[in-house]
Amino acid sequence: MPGVEGRVALVTGASQGIGRACATVLAAAGAKVALCARNQEKLEQVATEIAASGGESAVFKMDVASEEEIKSGAKAIVAHFGKVDILVNNAGITRDQLVMRMKRADWDDVINTNLTAPFLLTQAVIGSMLKQRWGRIINITSIFGQIGQAGQANYASAKAGLIGLTMAVAREVGSRNITVNAIAPGFIETAMTSVLSDELKESMMKTIPLGRVGSDLDVAHAVKFLASEEAGYITGEVLKVNGGILMG
Image (cartoon, rainbow, N blue to C red; front, side, top):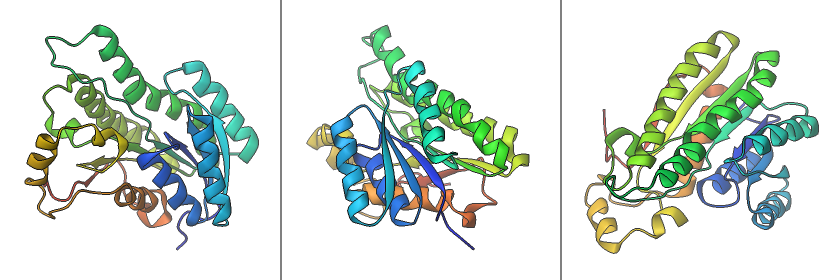
């Protein structure tokens, strides 16, 4: 049974971290990858890396906080590749603050980028998937969308909402052979987690049964599986990639 070879994948936040890992892993497995993020220069570096390994990709500068850029970017991607088979909604931001001090703008920015953008991107590419009666939508949520986190009311709310979006869309499009799943990473070593205090990192490490911090590749390989034919009977699922912090 084939994996993702020959499929077209759109990955947001592909310039760094988990998104970059997802893009390179999917390309290595034979997918053609549309690289999307705000930083053109970093995207070009990822494209060069993929090409050097014999893969195929194209760069599409996109700020997912902009509805117009999402719509125009999706059209450009379909025009370039002819379709979108796999959507990886990975782009995300944090604006941490205690709820009593959180500014409305910080709430809105996180909700728009982490929840509204995946909704808009799903709308933008779902037609391509419905037409061919095959598709994979993979939303990168977070363990904090499942257990909450002090100082991250906006982030946790957006990620919890993304889980709800995943399940709702999975029910809507399942009859067209389109699966919609979420991946909930735990403590992953990325630029986003590098800013956490040493005290918080140490306390989190003590809660991980596997005894190590996760890597971006741990998440990327899970994405590749859910994007493949092998995962064709899995939909509406939240796959925990957290080293065992949260079970059940």
